[in-house]
Length: 450
Ligand code: HEC
Ligand code: HEC
Ligand code: HEC
Ligand code: HEC
Ligand code: HEC
Image 1 (tube, rainbow, N blue to C red):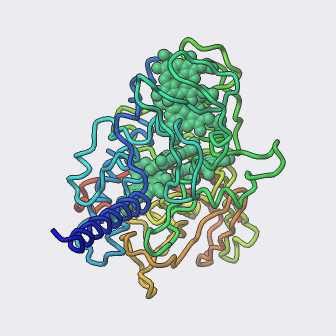
Image 2 (cartoon, helix red, strand yellow):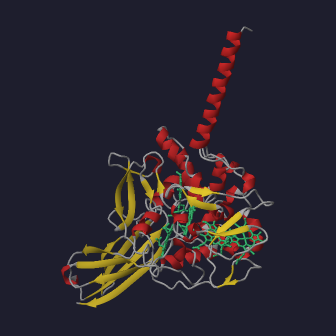
Image 3 (tube, protein in one colour):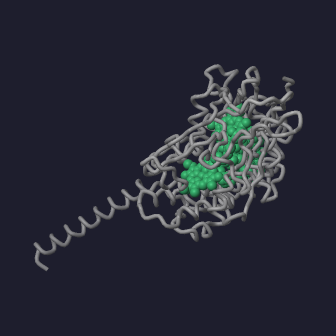
């Protein structure tokens, strides 16, 4: 080989080397970090010493986020039939939050089979070592958690939490301000469309703008301040007591004035009970029943006018929050006369179990960018409607009904909640295959003699 050839071959190899290095560097940065699965410790191991916290977390929505049958049905429904690459990107993004250990250890969600390929540990979804290895968040949406796990059980690394004086022989401990702030929750509880940026869930933003993100420490209530204070009989909302929970954080640990609970109860009464978590379903009921208050203005009832006020007295965010394109919270209004004849009714379910179109419903509606409502969040290019109740605030609804000659009127108003519309369940799972319970959050009744 002459010198010139050799030189050019070497140059080619160098160029290939550089290009390969740049390629790997680029993919590493653009695809985010992938960690080896062995770096995460199973929640069962944590449960050996933190047995009470483990049993609270078991069957919680965080533990069930991967198997949750409603989530599974919706994500599989979304994966089918999309052609637009921007919509496909959104439909494949779910694992980031619903199976976060799977996602960070390299499992994508490209087909519905991918979900079945994740390890048994990753299938335990949002778990101890995932949250307690977090050091901060790089953005406040779409799960921007920065993680620093150990190297597995032989070298468990630092478990971060609320204590400044905690000691364990098994793992190092450290106080973490991040764990005591709403930010650790908010990075997942703010969901935006990965391509269009449409705000799909805004629980953290709603809290941040609201009265509980107060600069006065005595009025400031974090997500944890409600959701990690709950236990049976203590719903821990803004309208109920939130007393400290004295106990031990570890079985062999010291008595503590307060240990945060790990039940992570919101409004879901269905999914945990399907996995043996009936206690969580009961707690969700208690939470919903301490979220809102109703008031009636019957001054102009003779003229066929009724005022109803609904106050978000218990929630730290809008009512409802989260997946509000799916959640249903509505008023069921009935007025009957002295003969028990219905004079007026609005919001009663129809024969299919659907909330009627004229009902007063608090929810959000997404659009396709051209003003048409869409059910498929992958296609959500705009928010068409947002009718909900901000934290601590009231809304008033003015109802008109036909004047009549009744001597006595009884007014019954209920505020109802259902996790998903029957129509959506029929569409995704097949007609009549699944029904969901309807929770009466609040009810008010009065009888007037005219
Ligand atoms: C940034 C984090 C994040 C991503 C990404 C995400 N979700 Fe969620 N998801 C949540 C949170 C938080 C909740 C709980 C909100 C609530 O309860 O209202 C939730 C709840 C749900 C529920 C309600 C389950 C039930 O039992 O009622 C469904 C269905 C769901 N998500 C589907 C999806 C699908 C499909 C995708 C992907 C297209 C996805 N999610 C992507 C955070 C996320
Ligand atoms: C969604 C994230 C998340 C998950 C999952 C989670 N924790 Fe926590 N944990 C927290 C936060 C946040 C705090 C501190 C709350 C605060 O200070 O406001 C905490 C507190 C703790 C503490 C300190 C004592 C206490 O409760 O106040 C221990 C110990 C603990 N967690 C262990 C565990 C174990 C064991 C598991 C699994 C069975 C687990 N955690 C799952 C977020 C989580
Ligand atoms: C061999 C027993 C043991 C095991 C296993 C164990 N811990 Fe601990 N952990 C403790 C003890 C003891 C404490 C101290 C409790 C206290 O200070 O009240 C503790 C404290 C903690 C704290 C509080 C840290 C702080 O500074 O606020 C967190 C968080 C925690 N553990 C998480 C975990 C997680 C996550 C796992 C599983 C990966 C785990 N622990 C496994 C014994 C254990
Ligand atoms: C890694 C992302 C992630 C983090 C961090 C996280 N969550 Fe969640 N959370 C979810 C997902 C996903 C769901 C929904 C699971 C499902 O529906 O299957 C959920 C569900 C919940 C629910 C139950 C909602 C319902 O409909 O009943 C509550 C309450 C909740 N989270 C509170 C918190 C709090 C408080 C924190 C902070 C301490 C937090 N979450 C941190 C992702 C996260
Ligand atoms: C002042 C108490 C309080 C605070 C603070 C609070 N919540 Fe809630 N949360 C509630 C109540 C009450 C409900 C039940 C009513 C409802 O669904 O909104 C609820 C429900 C939820 C739900 C279930 C919504 C649904 O219908 O599916 C999620 C998810 C949730 N909260 C997450 C959070 C997160 C994340 C934060 C912090 C950013 C937070 N919460 C702060 C009281 C609170």
